[in-house]
Length: 119
Image (tube, rainbow, N blue to C red; front, side, top):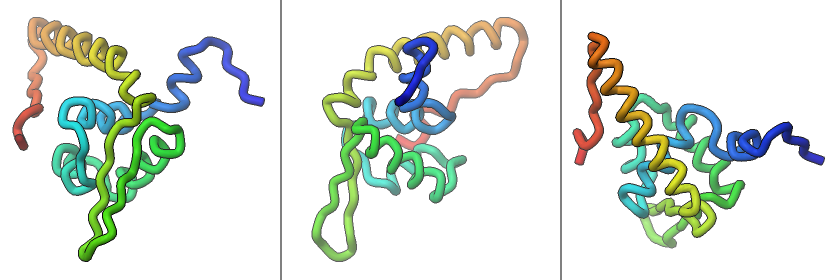
């Protein structure tokens, strides 16, 4: 039996960690993506970590892995309806992140945001 002290623990069990939220945000913003496209958008993640995070998100029913029977093999990932239900929460996190960046800049921190650089 799983036990959670507060409901956010259940959410963090699925989306916790540095990379899962980033993967989900890319899929929300860009729709269906191949592994190589995700890797290009996330240059600091290792291939092993990307694969592990994708498998965990698939196991939790948040994204779907689509395998095309062709040579060379083609695999794509897209959000399930269940995964899409995370979009409002993740968009709120992105908005908060933008405010946090503005605050950091206003306090004299040197901040650079690369989003959109590879598009």
